[in-house]
Image (cartoon, rainbow, N blue to C red; front, side, top):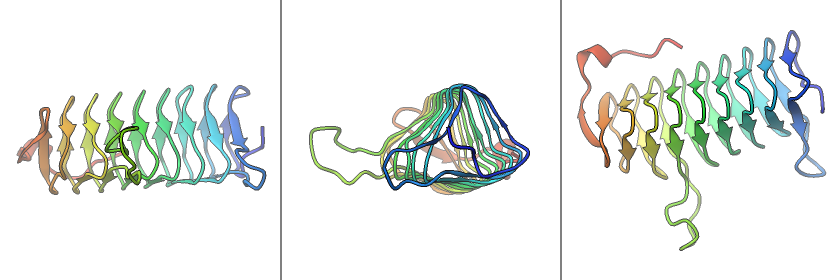
Length: 192
């Protein structure tokens, strides 16, 4: 285990910070006030801001950039080459694939799954994860297909299957998700 480059941190003895996936990989950079719980694995070539926290068994793969005050829940997986803004909360069992972009003040509910391969195994396709803009909330068990953009301030309901872009300030509900006006009670930014 390589010591992360930060101060005032709590790293459980059973966590791996600095998993070398290649001979020329470099230690992760982790800001101040991190709490990294048991079973968590953070690869090399990862940059994380201040106030980072994980649940147990979280995975952060290589070439990922994470902002300040981000929570990566128990058994959540970030599969690398991903950009995540500040003040993001990913709950238990969230899956974020390679080539995904997540903005600022985003909430991702338990077991939400993002995908990046349009034709798994059947056809060649450049992997493209979803883009989640600022102040988006995504409910539990929602599924987002490759390449979709969820617009700023939108709300994806629990269990929704997002197959098309969600316009800013919209409610996406159902399978496949239909777009509806965002109710007044759900308008406004996220306070994470």
